[in-house]
Length: 240
Image (cartoon, rainbow, N blue to C red; front, side):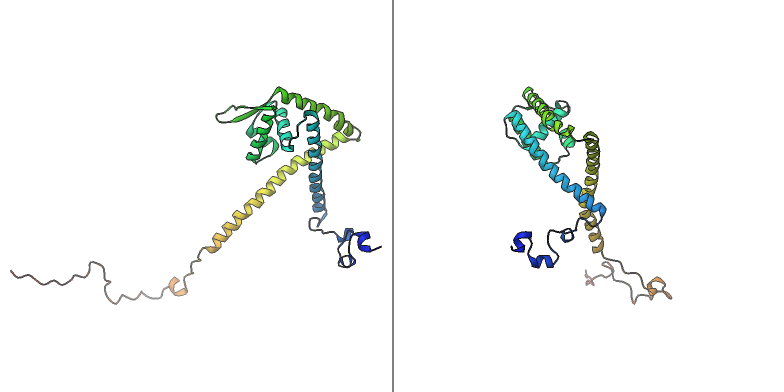
């Protein structure tokens, strides 16, 4: 059998150090134990997000009969978890979101389904949203089926509650670390621009020894300096 078909790697690629073995993997994000652990953690975030979003979408569709986006599911439960009434600013902070246009679009979809309603917030020009009776019924059904399926599976794992609490604490801590790292990246352009503008400024020439320590008095000018009013045009005298 061709080794390329059997291993998925051509012989010349294996001889060049490429392939599926541990020694052949690209280590650009695993240069030390900490970076290896962080890379594993980040891959876990990506995979958990995909698995969780698939689960939440299927469950929401099952209990409501509506095909919605994962963002709409998150916003619906955000309103319910916030006590049934919450402002737009509180939702964005609660979900750590910054894309206002996308959130407004999803909120309009939830309104069309009759699960939330728009209302005035506590302050002028502030928008709030409240859960409706239909929305409360849907989220109640979501919670019951979640307990029946997902929570039941978690109960089978020994020490799952403690592990979940530890994982949640790490995730919350990492949110702050990622935010701080993002801010540092955003500041790089400002720092680079500041350093660049400083380098563009002309450097004043240092005075030489003669200028710093003049020897003797300065030579007198050859003649009086001409000023705009120092010369008069000769005009012929008028005879009477």
